[in-house]
Image (tube, rainbow, N blue to C red):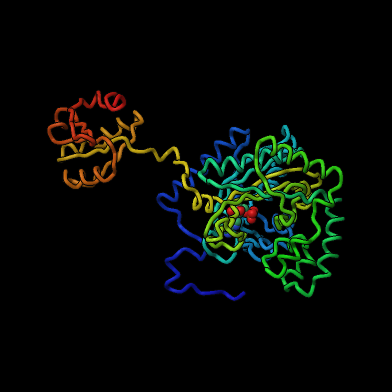
Length: 444
Ligand code: AMP
């Protein structure tokens, strides 16, 4: 492709589909991460951070052609040394690469890992869809057991609910193992061949490369055809049937509601057995959300995908590893969760201030940092505006902030090593020695 010049207006802006994360948003992302991390650690998962860049083949081989994220959306680059690298469009293949590279198969199995970081897809940006977005992911590597699938699904729901998503819904399906899938694909291809005349060019191409993907086609002409298409669950062999039944039994035991959706296949080549997706209801308009008539018929509610995942028993082999590494995982879309949450947890570092510190005069300003340091060492969160000089401007900020206690440190107090503690609710004031300040504030 020919090189495009950045024009003057574009120069001082983030690239299309990418954004700065600032202020409250930053804390919201971090608050979600801390919640997800807390749940992951509780269930015995350990952190991993893989590079943003990987060899492109990690994705072209692992994730596979015929998927949008590899065929159309991958950010790839050739380095000065001639390597072909890609910015990760998803998190599972890099984690599998790390598992193999570090010989994690020699550790007690399964190896349970969580990750968090930016993901890149060169898609058409719109509300809720970015070219750089954040995913939190879980991967369980080295176990074929159905309870692992159920655990990952359960943890995903917990993370969403405890991050303030009120209505979480779950869709699941099983595409079985290789044997089941072979029979199913044969039937599916025969079925779509009968409907070729109604299929658009993209879906016809998919019929050749990745027929499963036609099931999640957005073409309205295919809606009815897809609804009547053969269902993967009807082609499961007995082992696959047993696995899926156990997953559902586990979810029933946990009281998790789910909807079986036979059109759910999750595009990526590497999935086997269980596939699932989490949704919430929204009125926004991202185009991978499904429309359904609202109960009152007044509004149309839409389902926004907040995450998904599945089992990927053949991924390691498709990436060129000799051994099969059965695994199951999920990826959650943090940008969307932060936008949809009504009550995102506060990050630990962003404590609510307990006191507002005001200083007046040169002597007091000089000693201010020392007083603030005493408070920090005693874990008393404080706000201040040391750059300001007048009482009026500092009091105005203190009033506006809603912080319940103000500390006033003037010339006299600086000389006497004391400070005025003002209760903002009734404006009563007490003078306290600096030495006793921390203890006094803790007892308030
Ligand atoms: P996927 O593995 O493609 O299902 O992605 C997992 C989750 O990441 C989705 O359910 C979305 O919540 C989120 N996600 C995927 N693509 C984007 C994007 N371009 N922008 C923002 N979030 C995204």
